[in-house]
Length: 274
Figure (cartoon, rainbow, N blue to C red):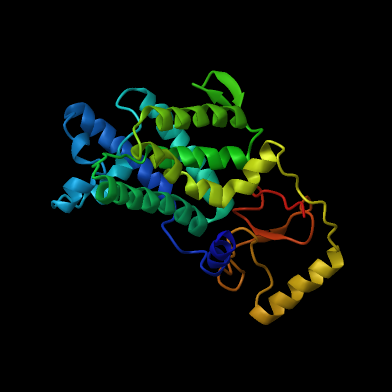
């Protein structure tokens, strides 16, 4: 499944909504402000199968815009939402980031309806765990990046991810079955996209030490370029100089092999090691 997604994203780099996290963060902030004026707004926005089937279909979308907190801590969450989401989109490309986020939304919706029809439980859900799954992905990609917790305490992302995991665990333990599985369902996309990075982050799996023949790799790229009528193709987002003639492309000297990147990803990609 992961391979098919990567192929789709390379073929359709413009798929999805550019700067998706920007719009989501703005919507969260607006709802947060409206809730300060009228606290009765939020109960009408949660995902709830019972109310959806009785005409309140906006809940299929509105639950994505519910802020993580009604207090001042929400401002910090908005900052992390935007920072992490923007970085992931730069790293993965618009198509892959959109698929990542909306697959979490779809899985949550499907499981919510499944619980309603099988267990006859109408659970009210937000997108909190979906946003937290982005945090897991960021930590898996940049485990040693240091951030300032509460803008004061320096801490590495991998340790914050462990705190995030504890929060998920508490959600699983404190809620009754089958509603307690919703946190796991919301992060299935994380294991699909970043499972390998997670194992490598904690040393469970090691990166293979395959030797790359640079000349052979360069020849293969040139053959692909000739058959596709382009000279440069970004290894992250798949854009080419044929489709985007005004875009600049560079080759990374730190990557193993022969890899080209567009100007947006030359300084923000994960280096190829095999």
